[in-house]
Image (cartoon, rainbow, N blue to C red; front, side, top):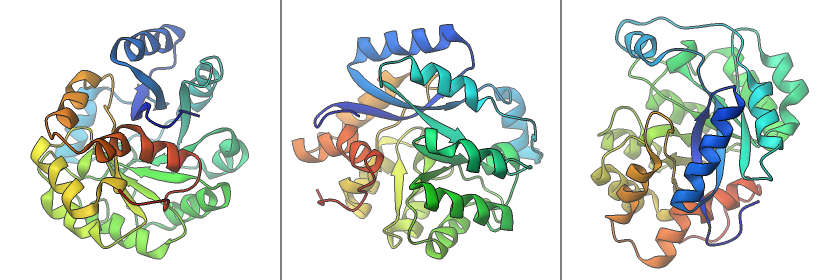
Length: 258
């Protein structure tokens, strides 16, 4: 568990090969990142994913959560494994193995499942039983978008949801406004413009913003710079860069506000 004042990258993709873990840890050392929440990557090539975002489509194959867990367990606590849920038949596997992970990701962008689908509610219910937060990547498609996440959060107030990438696209001021009234939704910083990040801090509060990089698609230095240029007060900066993640990872999302 990271200590107070340390930097936590809340969203990292990790390919299922040992060299990926070694390279990630070396990069974290270079940038002063203490811990990273890691989730399986490599399920779909970026060029395929980008086509799915435009034209529709999904993948349904198995995700190598086990390799991510194995790499995390040999990292000395620096890599914290998040379970990538597969709504195409993967609920039993999550229920069985979920206690070994720190949280759950669901991705309409990858799997094409609407957030109002019964299977998503089932995954969220298991997450609640395990004490997990749920990280969601929204896309601009009915039932898979930020309004759908806001509705899902309203239906499960006992679960904390993490809205990835500051919403959809890189300028989703509207999406942040939609979740502002959902206290069980926090946001992760990767991808959005610095102006959107500033808006998130102002409208949601610095206690509801988590630093994330989306490594390896984005270099963590870029996302760290985005936080730095806001010139936040020290307490808010510390909360965004690691304090909020530490609190969420310890299961106390509603601790003191910043």
